[in-house]
Amino acid sequence: MKLKSSLLTISLVLSLVFSVGSVHAKKILAPNFTLKSTDNKNVRLSDFRGRLVLLNFWATWCGPCREEMPILDAIHKKYEKQGFLVLAVNIDKPSKGLAGKKSKVVEKYLRDRPVSFPILLDPTNEVYKLYGVKSMPSTVIIDKDGHVRYVHKGYNSGDEDKYVKKIKSLLRE
Image (cartoon, rainbow, N blue to C red; front, side, top):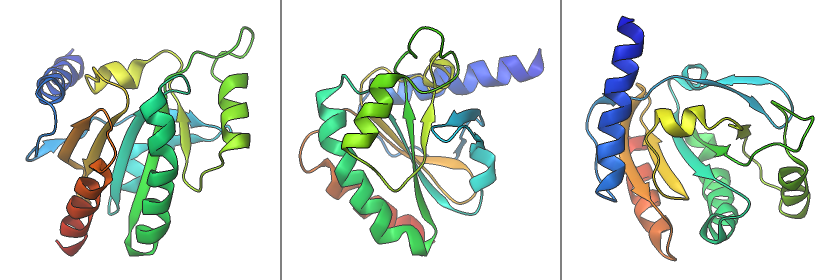
Protein backbone atom coordinates (compact mmCIF):
# COMPACT_ATOMS: atom_id res chain seq x y z
CA MET A 1 0.00 0.00 0.00
CA LYS A 2 2.87 2.35 0.83
CA LEU A 3 4.37 1.78 -2.67
CA LYS A 4 1.02 2.55 -4.34
CA SER A 5 0.69 5.71 -2.25
CA SER A 6 4.23 6.82 -3.18
CA LEU A 7 3.62 6.14 -6.86
CA LEU A 8 0.32 8.03 -6.71
CA THR A 9 2.09 11.01 -5.12
CA ILE A 10 4.83 10.96 -7.77
CA SER A 11 2.24 10.63 -10.52
CA LEU A 12 0.28 13.58 -9.15
CA VAL A 13 3.41 15.73 -8.89
CA LEU A 14 4.41 14.88 -12.46
CA SER A 15 0.84 15.52 -13.60
CA LEU A 16 1.06 19.00 -12.07
CA VAL A 17 4.44 19.56 -13.72
CA PHE A 18 3.05 18.49 -17.11
CA SER A 19 -0.02 20.68 -16.71
CA VAL A 20 2.05 23.87 -16.57
CA GLY A 21 4.10 23.14 -19.70
CA SER A 22 7.86 23.35 -20.01
CA VAL A 23 9.24 23.22 -16.51
CA HIS A 24 12.56 22.67 -14.86
CA ALA A 25 11.75 19.99 -12.30
CA LYS A 26 14.08 19.52 -9.33
CA LYS A 27 14.90 16.30 -7.50
CA ILE A 28 11.77 14.25 -8.13
CA LEU A 29 12.76 10.61 -8.44
CA ALA A 30 11.52 9.31 -11.79
CA PRO A 31 9.05 6.46 -11.30
CA ASN A 32 10.62 3.17 -12.33
CA PHE A 33 8.86 0.93 -14.84
CA THR A 34 9.38 -2.12 -17.00
CA LEU A 35 8.08 -2.23 -20.57
CA LYS A 36 8.63 -4.51 -23.55
CA SER A 37 10.74 -3.10 -26.34
CA THR A 38 9.92 -3.59 -30.00
CA ASP A 39 12.46 -6.43 -30.02
CA ASN A 40 10.44 -8.09 -27.21
CA LYS A 41 12.96 -7.48 -24.42
CA ASN A 42 11.99 -6.23 -20.96
CA VAL A 43 13.45 -2.78 -20.42
CA ARG A 44 13.58 -1.20 -16.95
CA LEU A 45 14.23 2.49 -16.51
CA SER A 46 16.40 1.72 -13.47
CA ASP A 47 18.77 -0.26 -15.72
CA PHE A 48 19.95 3.08 -17.12
CA ARG A 49 20.92 4.66 -13.80
CA GLY A 50 24.23 6.41 -14.41
CA ARG A 51 23.11 7.61 -17.85
CA LEU A 52 21.19 10.71 -18.81
CA VAL A 53 17.83 9.61 -20.23
CA LEU A 54 15.38 11.50 -22.41
CA LEU A 55 12.04 9.73 -22.02
CA ASN A 56 9.67 10.61 -24.85
CA PHE A 57 5.99 9.64 -24.91
CA TRP A 58 4.66 9.41 -28.48
CA ALA A 59 2.12 7.82 -30.79
CA THR A 60 2.07 7.10 -34.51
CA TRP A 61 -1.13 9.14 -34.96
CA CYS A 62 0.48 12.27 -33.43
CA GLY A 63 1.73 14.70 -36.10
CA PRO A 64 4.18 16.56 -33.82
CA CYS A 65 5.51 13.19 -32.61
CA ARG A 66 6.23 12.15 -36.18
CA GLU A 67 8.03 15.46 -36.77
CA GLU A 68 10.07 15.18 -33.58
CA MET A 69 11.17 11.54 -33.88
CA PRO A 70 14.01 12.01 -36.44
CA ILE A 71 15.23 15.03 -34.46
CA LEU A 72 15.39 12.92 -31.29
CA ASP A 73 17.28 10.28 -33.24
CA ALA A 74 19.88 12.86 -34.31
CA ILE A 75 20.25 14.09 -30.71
CA HIS A 76 20.57 10.51 -29.49
CA LYS A 77 23.32 9.74 -32.01
CA LYS A 78 25.21 12.95 -31.21
CA TYR A 79 25.33 12.49 -27.41
CA GLU A 80 25.11 8.70 -26.99
CA LYS A 81 28.86 8.24 -26.50
CA GLN A 82 28.71 10.77 -23.65
CA GLY A 83 26.24 8.66 -21.64
CA PHE A 84 22.96 9.93 -23.12
CA LEU A 85 20.03 7.78 -24.19
CA VAL A 86 16.60 8.34 -25.68
CA LEU A 87 13.85 5.94 -24.63
CA ALA A 88 10.67 6.42 -26.65
CA VAL A 89 7.46 5.13 -25.06
CA ASN A 90 4.81 4.38 -27.65
CA ILE A 91 1.20 4.45 -26.43
CA ASP A 92 -0.53 3.01 -29.51
CA LYS A 93 -2.89 0.13 -28.81
CA PRO A 94 -1.78 -3.22 -30.23
CA SER A 95 -3.67 -4.91 -33.02
CA LYS A 96 -6.15 -7.58 -31.94
CA GLY A 97 -4.35 -10.71 -30.85
CA LEU A 98 -1.05 -8.89 -30.23
CA ALA A 99 -1.47 -7.91 -26.57
CA GLY A 100 1.88 -6.81 -25.17
CA LYS A 101 3.47 -6.70 -28.61
CA LYS A 102 3.95 -3.94 -31.10
CA SER A 103 1.01 -3.06 -33.23
CA LYS A 104 1.24 -3.35 -36.99
CA VAL A 105 1.04 0.43 -37.22
CA VAL A 106 4.11 0.84 -34.95
CA GLU A 107 5.94 -1.84 -36.91
CA LYS A 108 5.18 -0.05 -40.20
CA TYR A 109 6.10 3.35 -38.74
CA LEU A 110 9.50 2.06 -37.64
CA ARG A 111 10.11 0.29 -40.93
CA ASP A 112 9.47 3.58 -42.77
CA ARG A 113 11.31 5.75 -40.21
CA PRO A 114 13.91 3.68 -38.33
CA VAL A 115 15.53 5.09 -35.20
CA SER A 116 18.68 4.12 -33.32
CA PHE A 117 17.19 4.21 -29.81
CA PRO A 118 14.88 1.77 -28.00
CA ILE A 119 11.14 1.97 -28.62
CA LEU A 120 9.16 0.79 -25.62
CA LEU A 121 5.54 -0.31 -25.84
CA ASP A 122 2.93 0.91 -23.35
CA PRO A 123 -0.26 -0.54 -24.87
CA THR A 124 -2.25 -0.23 -21.63
CA ASN A 125 -0.95 3.30 -21.02
CA GLU A 126 0.18 2.41 -17.49
CA VAL A 127 3.49 4.28 -17.72
CA TYR A 128 1.79 7.14 -19.60
CA LYS A 129 -0.60 7.47 -16.64
CA LEU A 130 2.16 6.93 -14.06
CA TYR A 131 3.99 9.94 -15.48
CA GLY A 132 0.80 12.03 -15.65
CA VAL A 133 1.21 12.74 -19.36
CA LYS A 134 -1.47 15.08 -20.70
CA SER A 135 -0.08 16.07 -24.13
CA MET A 136 1.52 14.26 -27.02
CA PRO A 137 4.40 14.18 -27.40
CA SER A 138 5.73 14.70 -23.90
CA THR A 139 9.38 14.65 -22.92
CA VAL A 140 11.03 14.01 -19.56
CA ILE A 141 14.77 14.32 -19.04
CA ILE A 142 16.07 12.17 -16.19
CA ASP A 143 19.51 12.78 -14.72
CA LYS A 144 22.16 10.15 -14.03
CA ASP A 145 20.86 9.71 -10.47
CA GLY A 146 17.32 8.99 -11.66
CA HIS A 147 15.76 12.38 -10.92
CA VAL A 148 13.38 14.20 -13.23
CA ARG A 149 15.18 17.37 -14.25
CA TYR A 150 13.18 18.69 -17.18
CA VAL A 151 9.66 18.20 -18.49
CA HIS A 152 8.20 19.48 -21.75
CA LYS A 153 4.78 18.92 -23.23
CA GLY A 154 4.04 19.08 -26.93
CA TYR A 155 6.47 19.82 -29.71
CA ASN A 156 7.05 22.84 -31.91
CA SER A 157 9.97 23.33 -34.26
CA GLY A 158 12.88 24.65 -32.22
CA ASP A 159 11.96 22.86 -28.97
CA GLU A 160 14.90 20.55 -29.59
CA ASP A 161 17.20 23.50 -28.81
CA LYS A 162 15.79 23.49 -25.26
CA TYR A 163 16.43 19.74 -24.99
CA VAL A 164 20.02 20.08 -26.22
CA LYS A 165 20.73 22.93 -23.82
CA LYS A 166 19.47 20.85 -20.89
CA ILE A 167 21.28 17.71 -22.08
CA LYS A 168 24.59 19.55 -22.35
CA SER A 169 24.13 21.05 -18.90
CA LEU A 170 23.28 17.73 -17.27
CA LEU A 171 26.10 15.86 -19.02
CA ARG A 172 28.54 18.33 -17.40
CA GLU A 173 27.21 17.61 -13.89
